[in-house]
Image (cartoon, rainbow, N blue to C red):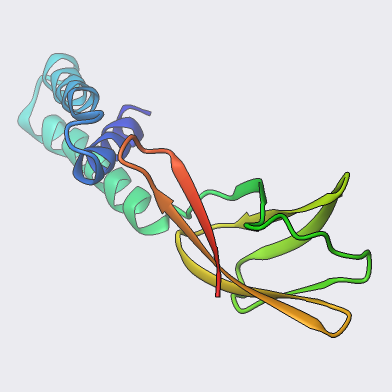
Length: 148
């Protein structure tokens, strides 16, 4: 568990320095202190060092991005009919229209950051948008939707 936290802390520190740097250093120091305190022989300490190192490699190479889900209003507050269809050009992203009183919003489910173009067809009219999902300076997810 400490290994997971220091890997996650160092990754966050590289993206948003110095956020979580102290946490990462503390967790790493605690793992090393436990190795030194609870093992007597050199071979035990080396084996004890290999276990967190192997855990770091497994975490870094197998960690999947988390699922992001949010609802947002479209710019210009267009009102769509119930027959409107959303087309997304990204296989890992799902966008659905939600009707809220007179305005329409979209519900987005995705697992990655980046720019995602999508369009909404309502009757004979096509609305094209570009959605940018990025991580803000404080580490939170930000969304910007612009018409194309």
